[in-house]
Length: 212
Image (cartoon, rainbow, N blue to C red):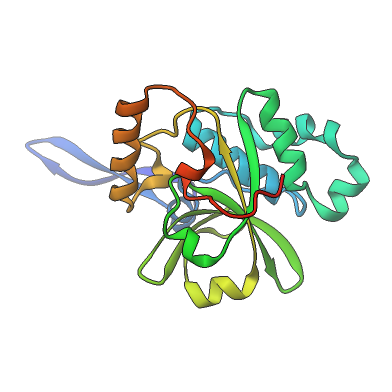
């Protein structure tokens, strides 16, 4: 099935009416950079965060090539990219990256979406946590698409680490903030109050155990 098609549904006074049809895969992966390789979940998740959070569009393959200078092909193919690799890369494009160890309660107070590392049947996998609400964790997964997990199920697979990328205002109209109007409003208010001034990490809801 094609990603989308223009389907003639009916006519009105001789004028064709068309409807754009999206596949289920399109909807599931909407506003997510899908990973192309087994080892590239970190690159795809970071590409998603940069593109839809900060308006920086770097294709996954380019991101892999540019981050490879901080690792080796053998290590990346075996283990994927690390948070430290990503931290070093975002600094080359004028942003800041920081790793934190937090508990699930902190996810309810995030001021920007963050990357987390999950263990799926022994497979270490990066995803984006968009926000948490009412015992549910809203995720952008480069392998499985947009997902909602129960907090207890998420907690079983998460190692407690988050990786935040900051350094410029997060897009208040970001699709990663869909279904989270309160966070979008807070971002708008903060932008009006602070302009483009750097925001301390504590204001992003990340207040514990700065790792690197």
